[in-house]
Every structure is written in C-alpha cells, then in structure tokens.
Length: 309
Image 1: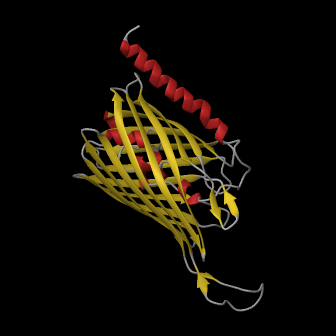
Image 2 (image 1 turned 180 degrees about the vertical axis):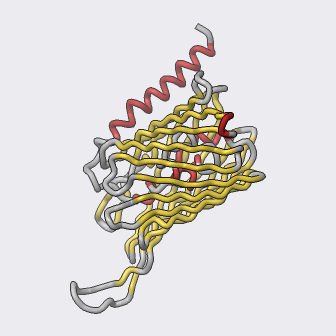
Image 3 (image 1 turned 60 degrees about the horizontal axis):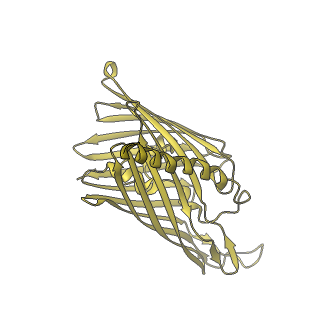
C-alpha cells in the first residue's frame, strides 16, 4: 500500500469521524438551553442569500467563521465587512481578514451583536426607570491549509464576552473543519464542528455554548449558454439544542460580475426563504441578502463588502 493511499485513507477517516460525531451534538441538550446564540447568526451576505449553505463553499475571509479549512483557498489577502439588520432591535457587525503565507492561511474574525436601548422597569406596571442594553462579542483566530492536493484542514479558537445590563459572562470555544475536492469535477464536500467549549456562566447560572455540527457539499458547473456558471449547495446542520436542519442554496454567476442567489432553511420555526444579489469588479465585492424570518419578528437584511488584495 503506497504512502498516498495511506494518507487518503487517513483523511477519509477524519471526515468520517466528523460525520459520526456531528449527529451526537443534537442530543447534547434540551431545546432552548444553549446561550451565546449570536455565534449561529452567520457571516457574509453571499452565504446568507444561499440559505447559509456554506460549509464547503466558503473560500474567502468568512471561512474563518464557516469552516476554517476553507481558508486554504485564499491565495493572497481577503478582507470582508458585514452589517446585519437581524430583528427589529437586534443588529450585528462582523469583520474578517485572511492572509496567505508559506506556512498556510491565517484568519481573524470579529463579530459583535447588540440591541437598541431596553427600558428598565422595577415593577410590572409603571414608568421606565432608565434603560440598558445587551451585547455579545466574539474574536476568533483561525488557521487553514492544503494538506493534500484535494484536502484542506483548519481550526479556529475564539474568545467570547457577553453582557446584559450589569451581568457579564466570558468564555472560549474552538472549531475544527475539513474540506475535500472530490474526483467529480466541481463537487466539493466539507464538515465542521463549531463552538466546542466549556459552559459560560451568568452569575450562578451556567449555559451550554451553541455547539453545532455541519456537513455540506457544493457543486459548481459552467453554463456557456448563460455566459456564467451555476452553483448549488446543501448543508445538514445539527445544533446542540435541536433537531437536524437543512440549508439549501442556488447561485447564478454571470461573467464573474453579477450574481443572483436563492436559498431555503428547513426545519426552523421562524426562518425559511432567502435571496440575494452580488456584484464583483476588480477584486471588490458588494453583496446583499434578505431573509424571511416570520412569526411577526421582522425580516433580516445583510449588507457585505469585501476586497481581494
């Protein structure tokens, strides 16, 4: 047996290990028991327009969030900013940076979720006595590299801080991911374990992190008749505190300049259809995504700008 065959089998074993470990996350906690839920809000408007189906697809700075193995696709430097109008009074900002070196690709990711001012009441009825707000911050360092011609691997470590009025909590989490370019041209598969770490503590109450397992695949095919290409993606998502969910996405890219996107998130109480658009010129990208949240919670809007240097 050749060394190449042994390496292929070893990497296949890693991917299979992720496949077996991911479903177990769904049985780790009861529904609604996880905290620091901003870690599940995603990064980037391209992925949001495609229903957050990005485990194998993300190959820019946002891969530091989705799957650190995807950082291996960055050839020089990638920088991205995103603003998320999520619910009526909840917003999030993210910034991502990836830089390629001879040792691999290093990434940094920042996310901050915050709310509008919330009135403070000391009794059930009466006038507000001032106001307060809430926010969550995550700072991530990530690393990804090509370990074989058709295999990428990566990991990420993040510091977490959350504050609600005068109550604060802090902690850490880690991600581990792989990605495989199959022998079928255009087909890539990937897997990632996200937000693995100890519980976070608010005063005397401990809460699990929103650990999540994701397995996904994307297929890209050029369509000469349409002067572009079509991308299809599917992610299976196992959250710590819920049942398996499915994320589906489609994208049509015209001449590497303009993109139209459509997605759907299945098995959610309040999320479903998504769509988006994108423009790209000389390494500059602008993307917008809309998400139908439902249940009178409002709609989500993401705006993103990125640069390939």
